[in-house]
Structures are given as structure tokens and as C-alpha cells.
Image (cartoon, rainbow, N blue to C red; front, side, top):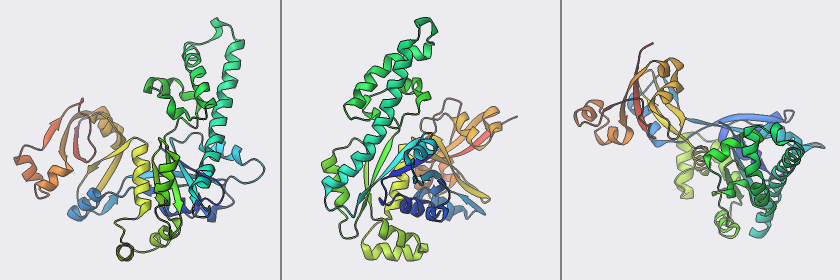
Amino acid sequence: MEMGILGLSQSGKSTLFEIMTGVKSTAHHNETVVRGQASVPDERFDKLVEIYKPVKISPAKVPFVDVHAVGDHPWEAIRQNLSGTDGILHVVDGFSLPDVPLSIEAYRKLEDELILADLLVIEKKLERLAKMSKKAISPQETAQNDLLPGLKECLEAGKPLRAAKLTSADVFTLRSFSFWTIKPELVVVNVAEDNPTFADQFAAEAKLTEPVMGICCKIEAELAGLDPAEQKEFLATMDIAEPAFGRIIRGAFSLLGRMSFFTVGEDEVKAWVIPVQTKAPKAAGAIHNDFERGFIKAEVMHYDDFVAHNCSTAQVKSSGKLRLEGKEYIVQDGDIITFRFNV
């Protein structure tokens, strides 16, 4: 699971990467690609840490990738290093451009590059398939050939493949192509300090199907450099509930189809990251392969029930909210689980 950060030059993408991950991308100017992980803000996790006071804490994290696309072939650097990512965080300049239409134009400029890249891939594949005999075409290529003409029309209309209403089976069939515009995308508008509503105006005028969020990287960079107490004071003076970068991290986490379940104790409180709709044995495997292989049962209570019963496992149990779940149980976001296994 990785989220690639894209943006035109001077959009603030590397600044946002640094704010979220704490990794100074600019300090790695000799490296083409820089990776970092951002902790997912979660009040539930913070509350569990407060209760158990563990020796070690392990919040959920989102890996981000930033590419320094410089030189004679910048697109090639992007293609090589971000084509395998699971999602795109597209940063748009909303602070130096004088109006919303110009920011939308900047967004479209990069988006059109991605659409063109996908279109070229499809055209080359269709040309190759047209030259092959039917007997030489594999079943997978036959399935792809059924989909590609419609996708070509979508791209030629200037729309990303996300707009093609593909099924999960279709996406699986196309997995070998690493299309850019089939990836989920989060649009982040980097706004000026004195114009915080610019992102809302952008979203209203651009009419994108992709989610749009706003951030002032200048303010957030100052905020990220403060300790937690100073951050709260700073936010209070700005009348802001939480840092924008936290919402963006959570947005990326959700966009990638991930969620968290918790394991708790005095040794460690940990948020385990799994795909949505994961069954209990596979969730156990996120901890250790042996847990999945020898899975017996999952002892489950939900965070909300835990808090509603005075943060007491005994009270949750006496109320009947502590459950033993089997192999078909689909883990829910916020479950607190103890796995029973035998190997």
C-alpha cells in the first residue's frame, strides 16, 4: 500500500510530503524518489493509549512517495517510480495563481498527461492484439480486448478511467497495465493563508468526481514544527479544530480502502491496517502468518462498546458485547481483538 504524490512544479507537493511524514524531501535532492510514512490521526487510538499506558505504541500509517521529477525526462522518473502506487494525491497550486479557473487549468494539465499516458498504452496494446492470430491470444488478453475499446473512448473524451464504471472483476483483468487514471485520486488544493475558502471554490467549479480537500501548506508547516501542547494553542488561536494535514492523511487512508483494528495491552497498543471487508483469519495474518494458519476464534469487542462500558472489558463481557467470532466474521473498523490460535 503506497500513495504517490503528484503536482506541477512549485505546487507545494514536497512541502506537503514533509508535513505529513516528517521526512525532509528537499534534503534528499540527490535522490529521485523519497519515501515516508504518515501516522493516521485517530482519537480512538489515542484514548486506548491513554487507558493502557503501554510501553510501545504503533498507530496506523500510510506510506507516501514523492518523486523529484527534474532533468530532461521528468515524466520518465515519475512513470518508473509511481506507476506501482495504489493511489494518487494530486496537489494543486491554489496560492500563487490569481483565480480558480487557472488552478483548474493547472489541475487539468497534469491530469491530461496521465490520461494521455494511459491512452498510449491502450493504443499500443490494441495494435499488438490486432496483429495476432486469435489462437495466439490468451484468455486474459481476450478479456482485456473486450474492455480496451470502451476505455479508449473514455480517455479520448478526456475522462479518467475512474469514470468508466469498471467492476472489481474488470479492474482485476486490467491489473497488468498499471494505468494511472484507474487509481483512486485525492485532490489537495494548496491555498493562500488569507484565502482559506479557495479549495471550496475550486471544488464547486471543477465539479470533479474525485474528493477535494484544502490545505495551507505555509501554516501547516509551522504547525507541524510545534509540540502537541503548542499545536493545540496555535489551533485555538486560529479557531481550527484539527490540522488539515491530519484530514488529508485520513482521506488517503480511506481512499486506499483501508481500516484499522486494535490490539491492546500494557506492552503495546497497536492499530493494524487491513483492507475493508477482511475476514477474521486474514486479519489475524496481519499480525503473524501463524495466527492465520492456526486460527480458532477471534475474541471481539468494538471500541464504541468498550467506551460505552466505562472502558472496562469486564463490563463489556457482562453486557454480552464481548463476542467470539469464527472464520467468516468480517472485521469492522474499530474492533478490539484478541485472536485464539493453535499451531
